[in-house]
Image (cartoon, rainbow, N blue to C red):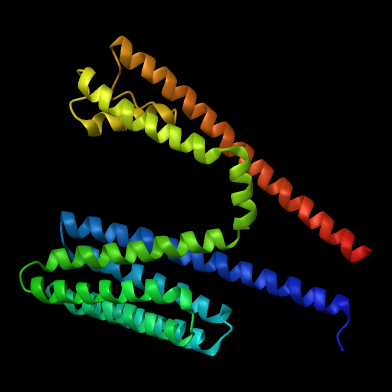
Length: 293
């Protein structure tokens, strides 16, 4: 039988290992996001061999993130899924690099097939809450295949753009999921309700939309709704680019109100962060006291 100290040491070691794997996976996903964005810019601007090199790094980075997830997975089917994705993404990266850009539709179809296989694996795990999302993902993947077949011969650069956009979305969603996995969401939601951040954010969004409509009509420098919305965003975030300015008295009053709302929102978000960590420290202290008692 293991002593309590040994169990505690093993738990701490496991937490450190998982934290290292999460950080490493996030770094590779971030690299995948950056290089896929760079590849997209190259394809749209030039479509040269440099784009394919960025593709190679982007897909290999994503594959390495999945390989790291393999070490963290506990269930056999989860390990099989992540290892399969690692092998598939690595082969896909090499195929993209060596094949002419006209044949990228093959990679896109393979990507869609991998989404279907991924969801089938999840169905075998019998996660009922994932069934609806899984069906939607499979329908989406089938639509990708149909579109790829229809436009493969006429728009190879469009295929490349779609493929890159999907990779960017997957990388971003994985980073987002890993980040929020570290948070105690129930506790965070409780603090959000206490601080009325939802009401303040909704009021701010309403103010931005309403102000954008008014400013686009009144201000001579803001020719359309997009310009007015951009101006409101700059005011609320206190960035102040200076590319637009309110000259009418109504526009200036709205600018003052938006600026005040922006300051309030920043203060509220700061209080949420402070309260969140205070709640965590209090919870940890209470747990320690219970163990000692």
